[in-house]
Length: 159
Image (cartoon, rainbow, N blue to C red; front, side, top):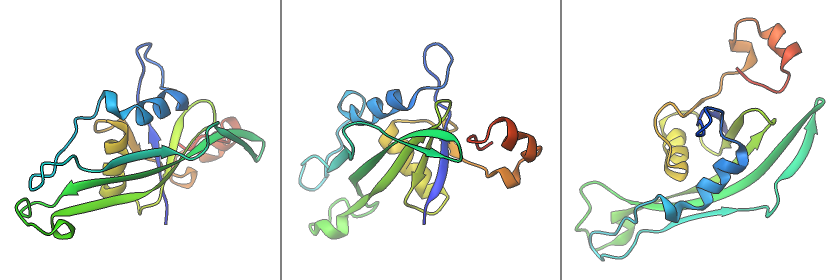
């Protein structure tokens, strides 16, 4: 099951950040992420992000050109109340999976390998150092007003 999200992050020019800017931010997590440590062992918690394709890939769907890449992620968090538990599998929770990040040249969107909801949003915010409302669930055209006009004027954009 996958869920779809839109990135509303804005750059210093008040424009939507490009997919490349977002990917760079995700991959350069050492610059913004504070290292979390296991309270029992005092060792850094696992945090791994990899971009599958060295170069972004392109595909045309229904006359619209999309650029995409594929991210694999895995990170550990400490389970609340288990901080002093000597058994690591009971103390730590690993979250891992994959995300397709793509753009039609206007907006960057994500396909997350989780059901729509808080867990998927949390993953996107963790790997992207994002704040609330910068990444939001995508609505389908069927749920939008004036969907036939949107389909004609902007076939690749989901409102």
